[in-house]
Image: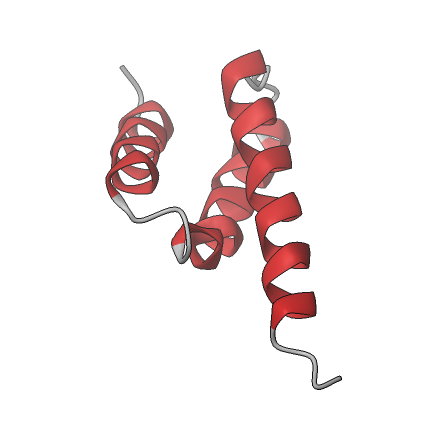
Length: 69
């Protein structure tokens, strides 16, 4: 297992353990690991892509939740 694989596993565990209302804040860390994987020529697992997409959606939702009406 490479260092990036270990970091990806650690981050995925952390994201799943974090409450849904705030886990989107971990998206930048996941994005960085994904970028590192790609830059080293590794494929990004589908489950990680799906998790990243979910975090992005949660971040967008959280941004609209904080907008004054």
